[in-house]
Length: 93
Image (cartoon, rainbow, N blue to C red; front, side):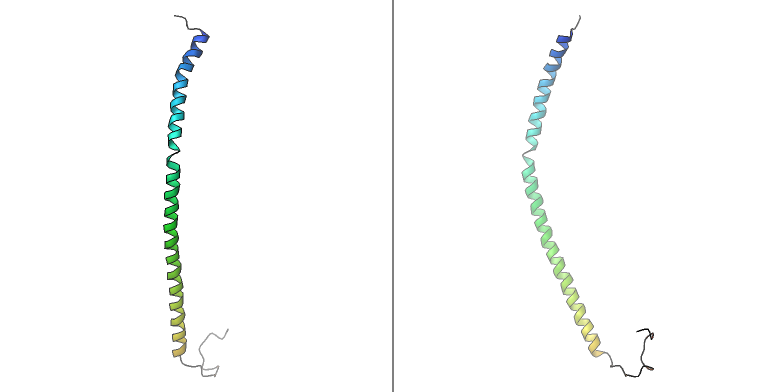
């Protein structure tokens, strides 16, 4: 059987047209998930921002606690004597 060029073209079209139609149908079905995934991602980001806000509050509270501890330590430290020979330090200050 001799297959001519025109027959080959028709056979290719007969195969390619259904394949392209199925591909287009498959790709169009993928678009429905995208808005849902974007909405879910947005909700997750909102949850992360709450966590970030809590972390910022924790850091601010730790800073305030450290400041109070520093002030208490400074208040309870002995006053310097005023004599440079008896004061501690490297002398570079």
